[in-house]
Image (tube, rainbow, N blue to C red; front, side, top):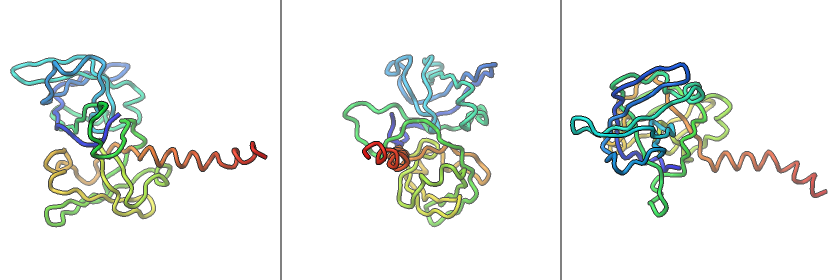
Amino acid sequence: MFTGIVTDIGTLRDLKIADDGRELTIECVYDPETIPLGASIACDGVCLTVTARGTKARRHWFGVFAGLETLAVTTVTSWTKGKRLNLERSLRAGDELGGHIVQGHVDAVATVVGRESTGDQLRIDLEAPADVMPFIARKGAIALNGTSLTVNSVESNVFSVHLIPHTLSVTNWADIAVGDKVNLEVDPMARYAARLIESLPNLDRSRG
């Protein structure tokens, strides 16, 4: 579980393609001695399991494996060497919940359809698949490439977010361009609320 508060911008240093997925080596600032094998790290919003870690030429790194299902529903297939990735280590009991509850389970891939600077801020417009739009509400929370953000507007299948200077300085959002694909995870609370509403008719019938 995560909060959508990015704690490092990692760099994809190596990538090996196999029949059953991809092995990724990501450079980071995290001390490898503090990362147990099997730990979860969100990489651009995708929860991946650490399979290796170490230090080479004074640079820390960790390795993860992205399976076929992950490749099918996220942007991982488009990642190339040198790509900067938003990183967040999993939430520990007692940690501050600075963003919102994020699971690292990508619901859809959205497309950037607009990018406009307004002073020091950046407005991003994104188009999302129709089946996830009911879970996206103005002023609601959303995780995009692992970043907890607030939705500013919603119209049809397009929604927008505003990025403040601090967010731009501690994430890879400054790299984003129109046409780029983005990992999208809706607020779990919205998902559970929708499921509850769907089940209400059945609950009523069971009581009658």
